[in-house]
Image 1 (cartoon, rainbow, N blue to C red):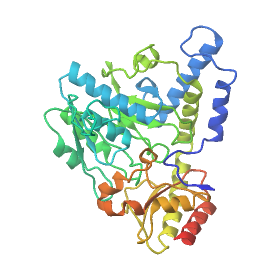
Image 2 (image 1 turned 90 degrees about the vertical axis):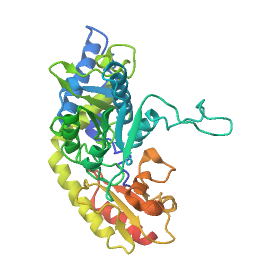
Image 3 (image 1 turned 60 degrees about the horizontal axis):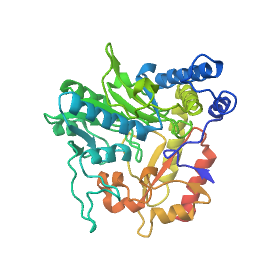
Image 4 (image 1 turned 120 degrees about the vertical axis):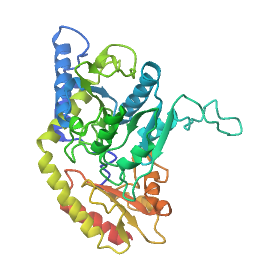
Length: 397
């Protein structure tokens, strides 16, 4: 089987695995313990990894909080910022996001807006009726362009007197569109509004500089840059007075500057650090490789009748290719099942498994949702695998 679902997760790099193994074997110390060798070694490893991840993000090490991944980082940042600003700041309680965010952002904002329910939610009656829950926050979900870009003008139009935060994705995880978060951040800065971005799909594909972009907060995961699953980071901008106050995610010990209590997963953090180190080291090489493979893939796929790009914009990051198979009898789920012994691809985000893609619907293609496939490339992908994928498509369409 050839693997083309790297936007869901990437294979772990061999150098990353080797860096992690000692911290699963002999170096098993708790970094929060004191004085003895294994604890000191673990603490040093954590801080070295923090420095490596900070270099990849263009951040300072003290601005990073290690989390379980981008979903946790996003929940921590949005809920923590909105909570602190509403109850301890100026009372502002409105957040702006887009309709095409990763589910971590979308559903967090829906929750704050009183729209999201669980099966055991007490606001749902025995007959299934739902009531909007007033949680004390408001959210606005701005639209996107036909290619998935979040426009600064749309964000500006949605700003209210009570707007506290804007949260927009940098690179869309389904169609690869790069939005101008730097311009949106400038707008937010002028208005005294916090700006958060999920930068997960940008890392390792394009250069990221959170300070250069003007971000206050950012979320990312290791497993999209050839690191382990279950580890990510939250970027919290600091100034001369330190990090702006934000409600802690996990109360407990004083790990991660008191923002996230609990014993650190040293082996995963080391893996994240090594993956970040490799991403910085090989950035130019990997960018060129992904661009070359992307050009080959797109060129060959568009040579097959009835295949079109979902996103024809030049503002698409290489390596994430969303295609539309415009055949009357084509259904993406059936196709994926049919070729699953030969090929790993997806219909869209892994976090929306089993659901029609709301991102594709937001592009104005609601009637084409069942005809869209996402193909994503990694640095280990070969030209021969590209050609095999294209042949599978030619054989089964």
